[in-house]
Amino acid sequence: MTDADPPDGRVGKANGQTSVAAESGGCDSTMHELVSTEGLNKADQYARLCAQAQALLSGEHDRTANAANLSALLFQGLPDVNWVGFYFFDGVELVVGPFQGKPACVRIALDQGVCGRAAATGVSQLVPDVQAFPGHIACDTASRSELVVPLSTAHGRLLGVLDIDSPKLARFDAEDQHGVEQLARIYLAACEYQGQLD
Ligand code: SME
Image 1 (tube, protein in one colour):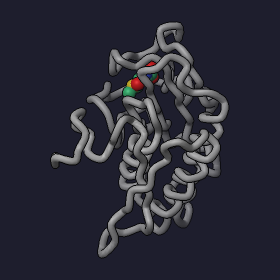
Image 2 (cartoon, helix red, strand yellow; image 1 turned 90 degrees about the horizontal axis):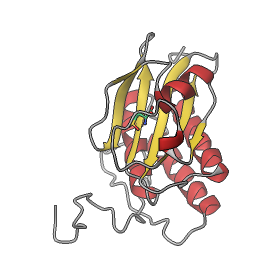
Image 3 (tube, rainbow, N blue to C red; image 1 turned 30 degrees about the horizontal axis):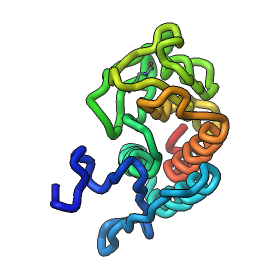
């Protein structure tokens, strides 16, 4: 922490509005500069986040590294979110991957929770009120709404899910779903390399 960091301890996240931009992949000589999405409408926020994700992930095929950086990008760049991260399918169930936010439950069966539903159906789950979702798994009691996007390879193999939680009711709408699905495609395209995802 520095004196310039916000008191909530999230380095670089000011008032839930700050975002990051990646100017290039690779850390050899390049800092990932921060560019704010503050004040932008959702369409412009996602356009900027997608451009930043492209720059941040392009050239890197490692799914864990890309999941870590995309989680950080979205946690910094999306307002009013308290958890952003990945669950990966291990062939039996979902296992938590890179994320930002409070410690989370490690394993989720495909017939459990919002994540399990997204993974089992292959359909994004937009949940305006998590308390109204039967079987919702509360990893952070502050979470009030949730968006989970499934991740599948070009050949339809389930890779996992990208999960975003908010402390606000009905934080996510169809525009968020569209934006996060685009971000998921950028993630999958970056990780795809000579068919290794399948
Ligand atoms: N709420 C999710 C569990 C994961 S946490 O939100 C990080 C669910 O119901 O599947």
